[in-house]
Image (cartoon, rainbow, N blue to C red):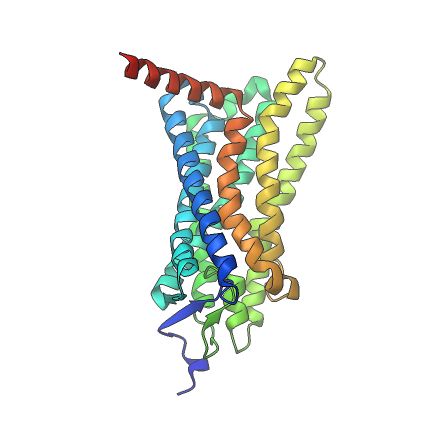
Length: 314
């Protein structure tokens, strides 16, 4: 039987950097540290936003959703990545690979839409400040979050099933750390034109369209900020938007390079490093960016730590 035509293989081999064991041990330590920071940082943001009444605003409501997405996103792939980095066994079952792909792709698509929603929130806050409370009411915020999660489900249900049905080459060696669409497309030994067209369309919908809309919204925000007379007002508006803009840059700069051209030479040679960046580094930096650059979040953290210290003294 030709295994290239076997659409349901027993499993896959995630190569990673298997040709360089020393690098893998180093990566194991680095990824472990980053993962712990990701868990602590994002859980802290969720807890602070829930506990502190001053953070019960649309901006922090969306931020908690981003933290929740990042927690699920990293947990869907990093534990398996650490297992593969630690020892010689690089295998992952077909079911495990499919599950990882469905979750990974769905949460990635959801994050693209969430970043757009957060940009819309910042646009209303800066450009329509007098109407902000009315426009960004709780019902609208809940609908926007529902749109985010439904979009993620739609994105993964369109792309993942066709990817897992590809005629994979008999060696089943995935040249990556995770089961993601570009790496699995490169593993196929049959015709992948439909899959490549599909990922291009999905990429346009979930990557390029939101990115363009985010840039347009920040164009309007920039005009509004420049029209503010007081220096303090400009600084406050800049602080409100700068953290989100940095997160957008970090996420989109790496993801678009991998997903826009899934079979490109660039993607094949450097895709693993970019995959590490947006699966490990970006989710770690997100909570640090929002806490270190946000006065309200730092104040809530100090208040919480202060209360804990007083309780311990008593």
